[in-house]
Image 1 (tube, rainbow, N blue to C red):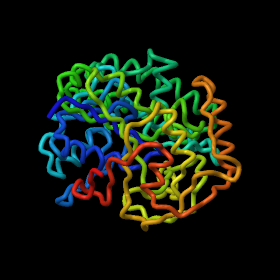
Image 2: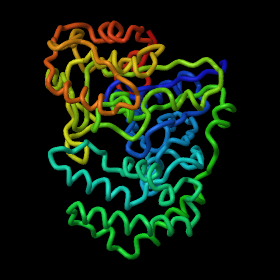
Image 3: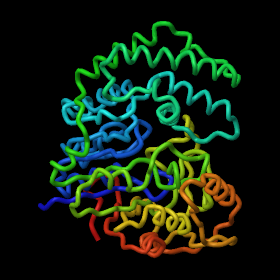
Image 4: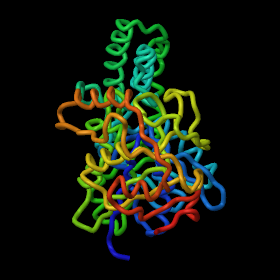
Length: 408
């Protein structure tokens, strides 16, 4: 098979089935490598194998069950302690040595316990204005890397005890003072004098098991690569509807930056209906009820909502991606042949993204979306998605395992 790349991008608010599609592509295309090119430890990509094994992939690529190696790229935000826990789950699921099949780019950022705790406390203090955090610390880590690089730890520091102690010591004092000023009360983690040494020890052990490698050379050496996107384009740090966004570029841009000139296919994913897990605008919420097997209510994200497929938001997502080459429509087995769809709102059908540096414009779009009324019409979901996005559905998924996915 010739050299090729597939870029898997979620055209919604996440949860479109990136794990299952990545697993299918890894098997069907005989991939050599799966690259996680954006996001980080907050991802939850479900894979169910034909023999019934299930795992929610977070920091290992969704091609792992298929025997495909993973590269965590330079934009990845790694939670070392959570990665150890996930590796233990994978061993129980039949993966003999999970760390042997993964590399992490030296420039990947590391999420530490102070960042995770601070992100959660900030979200609690927002009350009814909560952003919809996953509670992993991704946003806090990304903000620190931009604003306080001297307190930021990268994968290359994983086994550097002195660097870890220094950065965590600074973080502990600064974040504790900030949280006190905001009125936070539960600061027990910041009062734990032994935490830093426990982190140094645990991270040092992981450093002995986890191999560092630059991602771009790995991509160049691989014949067939699947780029496994995280989150969704409508949560993008630039083009999403602020403040309910993630600290990551969710478009294909990060994957394209790592690619050579080989043929590539940008595959835009959507379910046969719309979903959103957590706070934020969702115009068609409640217009179509569909049971959800893998994403529960509660936790840090809050409610998992479903609704009619929204053509206005699909068109917006495709536009800010710079176009996609084909669609993958998932979860068609969970809905009838004809379902409610939304091609327009009573208030109009056009969303103008605006300039990249005008985040306030996307915040205004989000406020507008909260007040719109969807115009509903029953349509076959695959045909509707094709019409809304202007490209054909090359892949349809009618069940969780790779055996239930087919090219059209």
